[in-house]
Image 1 (cartoon, one colour):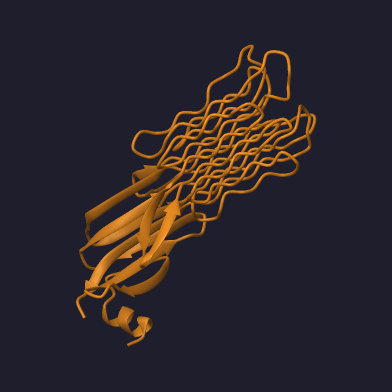
Image 2 (cartoon, one colour):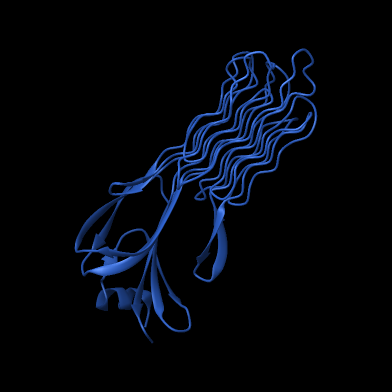
Length: 288
């Protein structure tokens, strides 16, 4: 029986991209909502579902930028869904910071949700600019940008139950080469603090079994440095930092944070944008 025929005979719910998966003991139906914006999950018969909500990741900063924080992650199992319409929102990733004379910090990712259950967008990564280098708060916090130790600001804070804090920057009072940005926080771990001329790594996300495949979501972006090493993005779509060019974007539909861009003040390198979020709903269809 084709999936189209089966859906006509068993229309428990509609919405998103629909797949069926045989675990060996039961047939599961999976609904994937990937397109940023609003959609509807329509339930025709009462069902018990497991769902995963991942918000958009934060963008990475510039000028020794901090990595973007991962989008918030919420997983709930064995949830009773009654007949009715459920509003699905998939968040976009935050734009990465723009390099040049008027450099900017990374922007926050957008929230994802099922009705009133909301995963918070990842916090943007900080710019390596004195007194303006702090990472932004979010589902996971953005890493702080590498700046002067005079007036340096902290990394962003993650949302309890959804993510972790960003990593601290490595600051220097007078010399710029040691400065570096911290990694963005991930759902499974905080972003790593920057080292001496070394961007911090993004925090890892958390794995899920998606139709038999181990898949990570919500990894933080890596930070970057003035002229040294780059941080690596966390498992779950986090983008790598880049000292010599534009940083990597977070992977689409993972909520991964964007990488921080390196180089000194007024460097033209741009931060990576955060990856878009995703909503996944599954339930048992029948026993074969």
